[in-house]
Image (cartoon, rainbow, N blue to C red):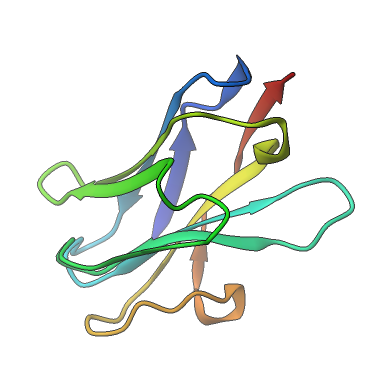
Length: 125
């Protein structure tokens, strides 16, 4: 059984920062690729960033590259998303996802098996 729990969302002014966390509960942590997605009202869920099972490879959406940084702490079984220079258009529910694979970093929702419940991020102008 695999569970993902996000935290760290909230309300912030444009230009501010937030750090999201996602804790994975599973028999092993290191063999899961993990990803952040987000979904704004009335829009489809979109890719934000992904990180390989060992933390060695990361990819970002063009919309967040240079502002967001994803990382993972394997002993703590936690993935992070540091979000800087936030914009109102970053407002969305942010979801973390995981899949038991070691050597690929997929960027589409249907490729992920496990999902967290989501955390709301609201950026005011």
